Image (cartoon, rainbow, N blue to C red; front, top):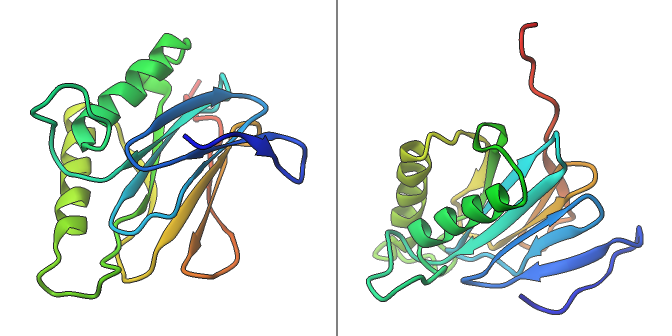
Length: 173
């Protein structure tokens, strides 16, 4: 992660670089460094206002230990860190951002393989993706405001837009 700095709304921002996983609660903001073919997995629990972001570079699992550049390692560590902070797994909701073919080469299919790998891992862990901005040819960024539960993103040089606002689940009671 990069060093934290203060946001306009006076909340500390943690920049999550490639191969890193970060978690936080209530008053912080987690934002990815630019995502080319990488994918940001944004996880959040609205009841505790605890969330996290994994900046994933490669599909599958590392053969050499616990390397968060790989999808399975990063997602497992993200979920474990959230659970360690008291988040029940059943409360975790997921948004995805990234996975572009920024080199615009037909033979460059790493982003597609990464997206498939992430969906397979999340399915295996029984975690649902509720919103995503994936693919295309332009880099993205992802930002999670831990206080509001809002996930914002950019595409290329565009202005920041809201992807999703996590809200309380309806229980049917």
